[in-house]
Length: 167
Image (tube, rainbow, N blue to C red):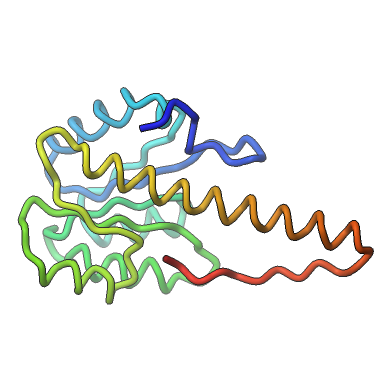
């Protein structure tokens, strides 16, 4: 991962990451790995152990990124993603991950609205890459919006915000 702090936007707001994971050892490992990454050290981590708890925390905390396991007690990660994406006024990115390799799950993740899908590996390398991709895509969209606003102001025109489709 790059040394640039990819989680801090141009306004200096620190990024919130909601981790929905029912395995306490995996939660500890995730936090340790993510906090060691130079570009992720300034994140605020929010933890939920069930899909239902994750939805409540997503509504209350408005995280920038949700990382959700596919297999949770009660509501699975795909349904959590689907519901998070339908929360009005919440524009959060979602990465679905799993410890199982199953091509059908990639399709289910996309249909649920996930921004990325990864297999949980021992070194978390793929998940870290997914996080970086999601934040860098969002950062690039933000820069494009700022450039468009500046161009419009120079021309004396109005600024109209157009939401770009999710990748």
